[in-house]
Image 1: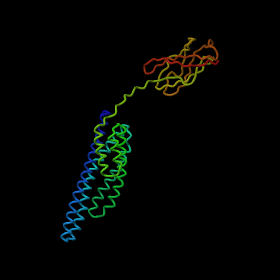
Image 2 (image 1 turned 60 degrees about the vertical axis):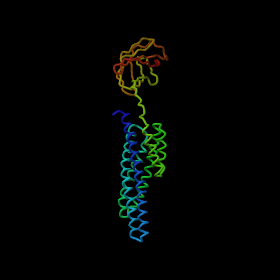
Image 3 (image 1 turned 90 degrees about the horizontal axis):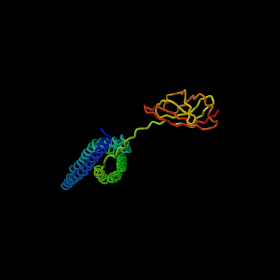
Image 4 (image 1 turned 30 degrees about the horizontal axis):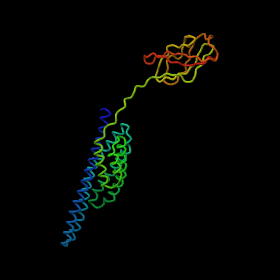
Length: 297
């Protein structure tokens, strides 16, 4: 799969996850309103008829109904957060700076799991503290997720996603709901970043510092090579003196101390800088490089 396709997959996961989060909020809000309305009507009817047990039963039924709706909403939210987590993970693997969003999804998942456990235990009236703990952890995770969405909008220069991320950070359900809607719409406009074709590295060989030539015919130079290479020959320009021995002839990656024997160099002028041309084989390509050395008899 190409990088652009992978990037599209990550963006798509974020978008579909946002849709699930929207559905989770809608279900929870509508369900709770319906249950509260039904519970209040039932309680009022029981109170009007003087049925105390009916009022208590209506209250318990109301709590249980709300817990069930929260449970269903949390399950849908769990699916959404898993998709968002996957999306952040894919984009992070491509080098996008959205790791904070992935951390947020981890916290949010932990919070949702605790909320589900708390909702189940609420049926026997002992789950409310667990629900509160889950809400706090999910709240922190939600803030980090919002920051992650903001970073996505920043990376892809999509304003709706950035605004959505800001709204998701705010711990108010209605504002979060609007934030996920904006993120969903904005992510539909996001396109992968253009890939930059990497230019092949050009092998390099160059001199480090300045060399010296001695009256015994030896020249000493330091060469840096970015890749293994072979020295074929060396010549002192202006004097037309060719090398008769080079050690080492094979350059390793990094700095190489090279000794070149030219034989009789008595024709050179003392304390004069000469150019030594090296003929080098780099991966089958023959190149000439110029180095400098001072004749110091």
